[in-house]
Structures are given as structure tokens and as C-alpha cells.
Length: 269
Image 1 (tube, rainbow, N blue to C red):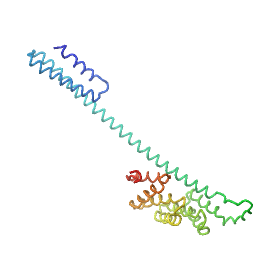
Image 2 (image 1 turned 135 degrees about the vertical axis):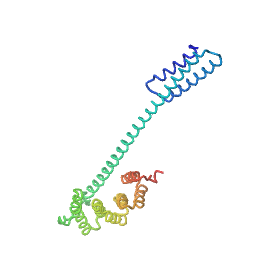
Image 3 (image 1 turned 30 degrees about the vertical axis):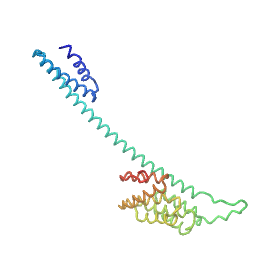
Image 4 (image 1 turned 45 degrees about the vertical axis):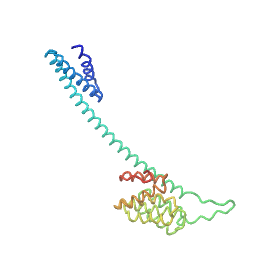
């Protein structure tokens, strides 16, 4: 009988002494205990001595205790793993947030660079044509626009507003008029005057629907509406950005904002 029980007992001891408890170890322990219990029944049927039966029952009890300890260890391991996964999830969310902020900063810097290039680009002159006389500094549209834009970059928004208004009053039909209206809206947005900002963005969208500021105006209008508590219309504006300008920086920012609001962009459904 000792030889009969030696193999399952050895397997049980090896499983219990393993440094890493797995579900397969637990299943093996349960299977071996069941086999030992069957051996007890067989010994009782064959009339084995009480001492042999008692010895085997003691072994079963010992292995059952080890099984319980192994299951407890596994629960502890699973609890630790769950905690580590929770910590990693938190770190991932923090990383995603930082990436979102960086993406917004990059997009804003890209818009600023476009505006600077537009403001400083020289007007083409036909070959052989005489260069037009330079206007007085106070009436130079590029100088006036660039001065207002520089005030915006420095964060002196009241001065920037004044400069952009002067530009629009003096040069309402220039190529940079749409930009001046957009940056007026941005000044208001930075001052948290969101209703005023929306009015300026609407001007861009209605008067210059094909402007290079259209996507930005749509995006920032959506942001401003959300800031004012008009979540429904704000989300609609962001979804329009994604539909109309799917490959733009503004569309990426709109998707990120929608995700932060718990809204899946329809273009991805």
C-alpha cells in the first residue's frame, strides 16, 4: 500500500513546494486528493487495516490543508496583481493626459507659426513693374497686424484686442482680416469671455467659410460652448470638426476633447 500511494503523494508535495502557485497546481492538488480518497474507499473495501486507512486519511487531511493554503496564496497573488494593474492604469491615464496637453500645445504653436508666416510673407511683384510706394508706418497693415499679434503672444490681451480692432477698421478686406477676427476671439477666450469669443468665431465661419482658420474657429467655438455649460452644442461643433476636417490637427484635438467628455467620435463608429 505504501508503494501504491507514493506517486500521488510525491506529486502533491512537488506542487505545494513550488515557488509559484498557479491554477494548474491547484487543479492538480484537487485531482490528487480525489485519487487518495478513492484509494481510502478501495482499502476499506479490501479490508485493509485501520492503521493503513488512518495513515492515508491523515495524508489526505495534510494535503487538503496545503490545498487551502495554496488557494489562499493564489488569492493574495491575484490581489497584488490587481493592485499593480490598477496602478499601471492610473499611470497610463496620466501619460495620456500629458500627451493630450502636449498635442494641444503643438497645435497651438503650429497655428501661431502659420499666422507669423502669413503676416511676414512679402507681396508678389510682377517682373518689370515698379514697386509700390511704402505706406506710412501707422498705415502699414502688416506692421499693425504683427504688433497686435505680438501683444497676444505676450499675454497682453487688451492691447492685442485694441490692435486687431484698429487693423479691421483700417483694413477690413485684406487677406489677414479673417485671422484678425479669429485672434480677437482668442483674446476673449483667454480672458474667459466665452460668449464674446463665440461671436468672433461665428464671424469667421459666416464671412470666411473657406478660411484657413475655419477648422480652428469651429474647434474653439465648441470649447467655448462647453465652458459655458452648453455641452450639447459644444459636442456637435467638435463632431463637425472631425467630420469636415478629419486629417487636421484640429480634428485630433476635437477627438481628444470628445474622449475626455466620454463621447466617442461618430467618425470612428
